[in-house]
Amino acid sequence: MRPLRLLAAVTGSPRLLAAAPRTGTAPVHVPPDSLSGAGGTAPAPGRPSSRTRLRAWAELLRVSALFTVPGDALAGAAATGRRPGRGTALAVGASLCLYEAGMALNDWADREEDAVDRPHRPIPSGRVAPGAALAAAGALTAAGLALAARAGRPALAVASGLAATVWAYDLRLKHTRLGPAAMASARALDLLLGATATAGAAGTHAAPGPAGAHPPSAALPAALALGAHTYAVTAVSRHEVQGGSTAAPLAALAGVAGLGAAALRGRPAHGEPSPAPATGTLLLPAFVAAYLRTAAVPLLHAALNPSPPLTRRAVGGGIRAMIPLQATLAARAGSPLVGLAAMGLVPLARALSRKVSPT
Image 1 (tube, rainbow, N blue to C red):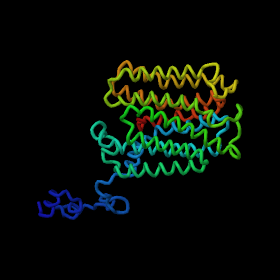
Image 2: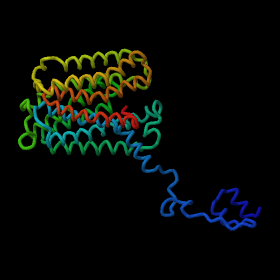
Image 3: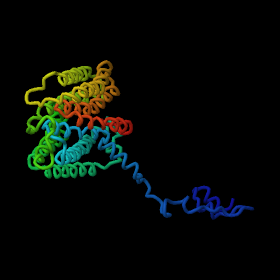
Image 4: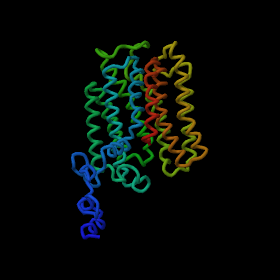
């Protein structure tokens, strides 16, 4: 073998192989595109593709859980007896930003713990830099508050309380006894944000619904119901890594059953607007059934076998069950069609959760 071909064989260089003459054979032509990326420039070694980076951020932000957020504002708007309007849209945008800020901040705060328990997460696996996650949390928080400010000062005040609760939970309260209560408060404030923003725009943008107009305080019973569900799911989520808890899913199952039964009562709670008699009578039981099926079944499985996979499945079911619960609250407040619109997000949430876990 000639020296040039020997060097090419050792180094594996395609250019040397192309240049080295072979006895009785014409030189091999190597196209430039086979040696480099588009435009003849080799990609930077070790740099992930755009698709890989996008998936890492989707996992960090848990985008499949995003579809559980708009229903908070819709249920809040329904509780005020007004149709969704400009203020509701601003509340949805603010809620989405603040929710994603919480997701990014959560993984930043848990980066050392995740390095041991969940090394596949975007930050411990090196796919997202910790500083980038923290910067995203700050930017999303600012964007959420800016959107809420456009809905009026009362909406900004509620959004500020929501943002403070999110940051306090992620940075301090998560691993304390106050953790589930803080998470429940955040969801309740999110629904109240929708009510406050919708009522604030009532003068020119939000028309009264069939049940008449009510102050934002009328949304408090719905906010407490959503907060109770969130508390139960958060309590179960504390065992999703190690498993082993039967009490948490059993307690959550009892809470879910109680919320379903309360939604089907003949008389609304004090201060809660009455539902529209026709469509509300038809859709409300369907929404409650969807809520119980989505949340109760995986909780029962986790109670019978508290393994980490079944516990995580129960948490995921509890998160997705927020959508039919929001629809239930909207129908009970007299806006079954708003609840039906919220239910339209269920297929999207289910499809995306198969690709990106909501937990």
